[in-house]
Image 1 (cartoon, rainbow, N blue to C red):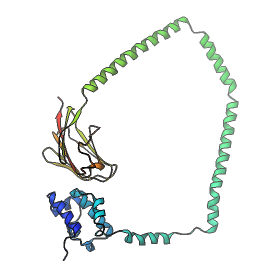
Image 2: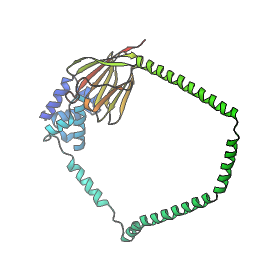
Image 3: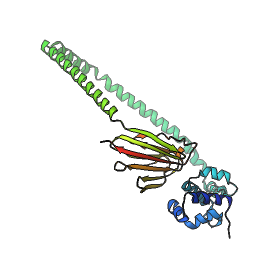
Image 4: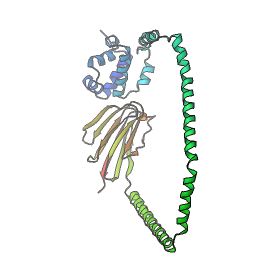
Length: 299
């Protein structure tokens, strides 16, 4: 019979504080319920290996909003180390390396020199070919230049007038295009979306998105945060861990609200229609945050 350890008790309290049962946690982490019970009771002998103990505890922490690195440091006396399991595998790899015969090693040493020699010879041949071809071109190039000069001297005054007229038309076109660009920029400024903080309380912050007819949400990971995304009616659209340098995108254009539950805000970036959302609560001070974005579609 096993009793709750200090680590197991800490994890269980965090789980119950979030209102999660073991079945709920099993659904979130995809870890079998019996292993979750083993983690809370400190019964690590039932695990497939020490590596899985640390991996399961890490997933458990992320699901209930705890920092796994802080937990490992605080309860390092309870969490088994994986170095003892990795050592035999590393030794076996070292012992399985094959030594290169002395004769083959000489050939390997000579190979770079042979390649360099072949490269030098190839470059020399290429230079010789280019020089030879250029030496045969001067006469033909001179003839072409003479013909072009003759044609240039025979240009009529009418042709010069046509050139000037074309230049004036090009200048007019540039002026009109510049005016159109300025007008487009003015329209863009008028229709630029507004994303502003409405309220902040504890770990909860609410934003308002308006002056746009689209709402595309993108959540990007700089580590491995746990993220849950719901719409305004409480429907779960995404839940899980986002791997480093990966992102989750959801189109909320036809929704009135988006609710993002972030486990590690300092490893998570939120973008709205390409605009980065600035946290109203410092992520370093509050790692777990609940961000709500209310959307008012432009008419």
